[in-house]
Image (cartoon, rainbow, N blue to C red; front, side):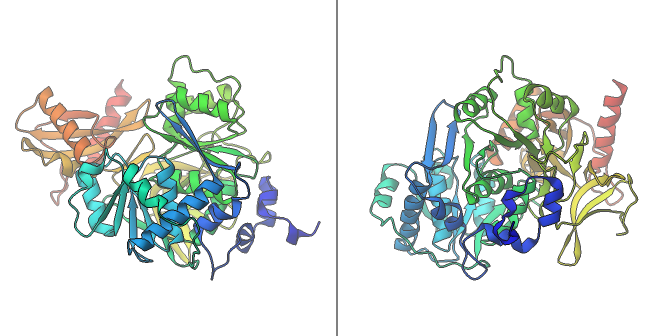
Length: 522
């Protein structure tokens, strides 16, 4: 067979992946090149070959289902691109989108990219402070949101505010449904805020249009997407997993994808996967835990062939549930927003042997190692920091891990004070800052503690003027409102004083060690 006619999507085994992979072959999966490339064209327009071909299915928690075809997305995103031009919003300017999965979200996302603007997806559970920090940081020219979030979106100067509804639809209807994009591969396409760091404001990762090409390595070997799959990713479209791996990657290959809007309900998701014949599910480990802990969950008749998880390691009980009940071993996909996916378990590859608890191995062409604090490479099974080679330098992930004698990597916990709960990455510093705004709180320290449903939850240790249940409720509600609905301390303990380092900083390690000792004593 002429190898020049074979695409990387035609190979499904682990051995073929490493035999045939070359970075330049990723470009064969697209129409464009480095000089002329647009994410919206590659994900939408080139697949709009019939009025029946579904691009996105949207499952709503309230029982509704929506379907958008590639053709609908192509025409409507053209209208949004024209609307941006009509309003005088120029190429390179940022457009923030604060919406749950719905037609307007996808239309705006791809319309921005066609117009040469930079899309900035924002989490819909952000409170006033969370939104303000990001608006002041990226300084968007416009914000698209809904009537529910509109009250906290008012008041920003030099910001065009669109609210979904009749008036917005009237403006859209006045625009032409044709548009000619003119972007290059190195033009910026999207700002992606990480879901938490040790800074008060998480970094905005700047993605170019050609980032879609690099993403295909994760799609092929991390989530195992292939033409013909029916894909599903219930993660939020504001974060990397839901946007890049759950939306852009499958659409780039012309694969139908399914998203989830509203409060997560395992029964609702399972029924939707049955209705639409989902074959490839990629979710947070917490989604699987919630499925496992939901009574009377009817899992018969599912057609799942590939199962992946990300965001945090999966516990053995949940992994066993997936293998026994869903008839698939859940395969890990590990990475960060900053470095992308760097460890995969090759879903769909029958010759890749799974090791319980492992993060898998690097995808083809990626060099991952374990380094000691001095930068030297660790020995097999020695714990150190997970690092990845990028342009001749070793880039730290801030995660600890080890590599065994067979080349499998294992997670060893966070190397900083980031807390991962239910797949969300949260900043201890940011939560503490919000708590300290309460007049009765003198000092605060937050850590992650084990939880059977969410992996970890935030626990806050408070030195306060009063120690009562009323203050617990006040603090939790205040943090929900100021940061986001998921980013608050589910557990609160009042203490006389907090452990400190010699420099006077709160020593969270001491708190983590104390909590670990309590668990070991039980």
